[in-house]
Amino acid sequence: MNQYLLMGRTDSQGLAVILSGGLVGMETADFLMSRGIEVTVLELLDQSPVGRKDAHGWWLHRCLRKSGGRLILGARVTRVELEAVVIEHEGQEQRVEPASMVVVALGSAPVTSLTEILKELGVEYYVVGDAKKPRNMLEAVHEGHKVRLSI
Image 1 (spheres, rainbow, N blue to C red):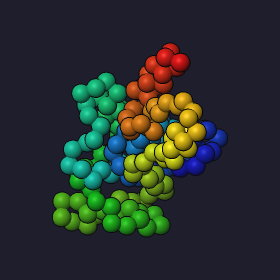
Image 2: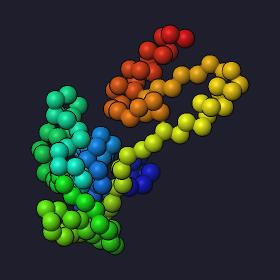
Image 3: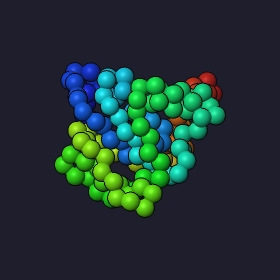
C-alpha cells in the first residue's frame, strides 16, 4: 500500500493480503474494502486479537464479513512470493493468491529516546497514545484530550 492509495489518488485491483488481524490490520482491511479491494487478513493467533465485545471491534468484524473479506486465524506466514503469501494453516502449507498487495501490520514499538532527553533537560512532557501503550485511535485521542485539559 502506498501513499497514493491512502490519499485516494490511485486505484488498486486484485487481492490485498494483510499480515496481522490486530487493530491496524483490521482497520486497514476496512479502508481497502471501502475502496473496492478484495481483502484476506492473516492472523497467527487462534482467536482474533480484535474483540467483538467493544463497538469498534464488533464493527470491524461486521464490515469484514459484509464486504466479503476473509480472516484466517492460526495462519503462520512462512514466506511472501511475487504474487502469493505462503502460510502454514492447520498443519498444511497453503497459498493465498493471487496477491497483488501485501500489507505488513505486524505490531509496533514506541520510540522513547526523546523522553530520556527531555527528562535530562528537565522539560515537562506527556506520553500519550501508542507511545504509552498500543490501543485504538479513540482511546488515544481521548487520552490526548485529557492531557490537554490538564496543561
